[in-house]
Image 1 (tube, rainbow, N blue to C red):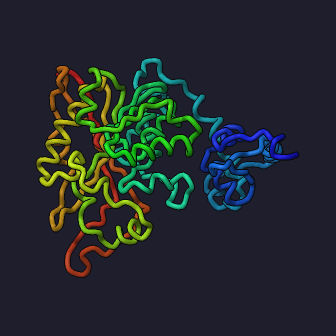
Image 2: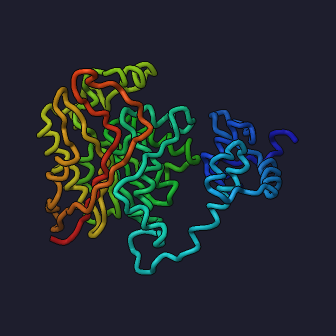
Image 3: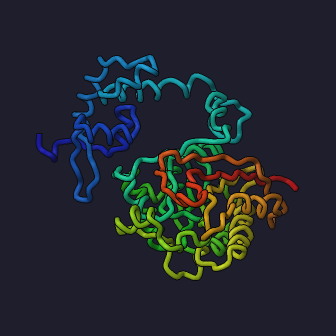
Length: 378
């Protein structure tokens, strides 16, 4: 059979056909279980007949039932495929979603674990083909982590806002979870990469389902009507942290790979270039987050993914400063923004560096905070 006679499908369609995750498809390719072809643009395409043959042959494989046993038996990709099939069939339909649940599409079993005050960061890994656009940004956050927040704070079809869109982690999460994203990004470079990311990592034309705006959030937000969005999630700039002198980690991970180390060089509209921390904090809260509160629908939520940081010898508790500045703030449409909780996002995969050794304690900051606010009556 020549190439013209083959019915080829995308990675996403291949995953749907086999009933597994996209990441499992990539592992199968790496181990030689599946052999895709590539388009002139470098996108993988899978022969549907080959997928049918593999799917039929995998039916005879018995998936391990004992969790402790299955951890030891990781040599076969087929075991992982069967586990993915099993997971895809079981939990979602076991318990119905409570009819009173207007927040999300989760049943009680799915709801409860997300209320923990911590969760572990997930990522594809720096060498994964779908991590190459993300890693170009100096401060990306994982679309998988955003997906957890989006699926808890919205239902399918709802509208999500990210006022610091970056390279589209929120947009990608929305596309995969069936939500609509409005992403605002100041820098044209990151704006364009976000669009490219959806079209190459998810599916061709995926970006057209969402709204990408290149511009200053302080201006763009004022153009939106009151109560326009169901959820807001973002990771804002951490003041001028990216403009400081490159340390060992930055030199090794960013400069050595010719990757950007800051959002922009000297853009006066870039909040990270504001000289005073107090002015930066005031601008971020007053001009961006309070305005986000206005365009959020009543009784809906805002999630801010942030980290504390050091400015020379001073430790800046950015997350607590944000809480103090934003909690109980009144929006222009007559509501208030209230803190509902703080999640700790654990980054257990990060490498330890000997900051301060052997003279003083200097913390390896291996966590972020998710600040959860809700718009409600005064």
